[in-house]
Image (cartoon, one colour):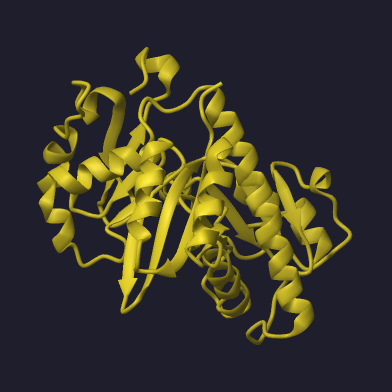
Length: 312
């Protein structure tokens, strides 16, 4: 099985932080991002699982901290049945915001016709948009019958893992057809979630989503991408200079098996396709590069090793 990379964030002083970068490169890890603020530095990195203790020891010696950020490099679609007031804004907004704390990139999606029992459904565009993400969190309501017998229609056509949230706390995941995980005590709300019980429920959501993501990483490691997405992201950043002028937040968004490049597809897809690696292949040889349903961005989906025949 290939090496499993885990996401970590280093927080510490600028002084000697280069030693952390050197050790990271020595063990075969990748630096995802680095932010320097006066005398402090924050670095997101992908570290081989077996080499984490080495980085932890060095961080401790430099009086810094190395903290696991389990959802770094994960894109999550937070789906609400409708944009109407009885489903938005509070519950879905709080869920999306809280998932960002451990590093996830979240996209909020309100379905056009997801409201009601008998008429709720999603359309092809919405399904395609949701399937561009690594997993989907469906923010459902507070009624047991509605969640178990009607809203499951919203899961049709969704190919990524599904996390369902709702008010009832006594529903088991197995009782919801099509869901990979159910988290209760997260139903409708007419206020922002600030209470201790509400924050505790959000903590449970983050914990369970992180566990699901770890399982996905283990599955991916059995047939890994032809190139690590973090490495492909760095090559795109180095060879497509226009990415530095993108006004989108996080112009390069890391996914479990790909990258979302926030540049117009029609203008820049050829440049992205022609990104070269030292071993010889171009990105187009080892990845499917398509137009995203989100703002016509460029979506890079790296092919697995079994399909390409090699790994770089």
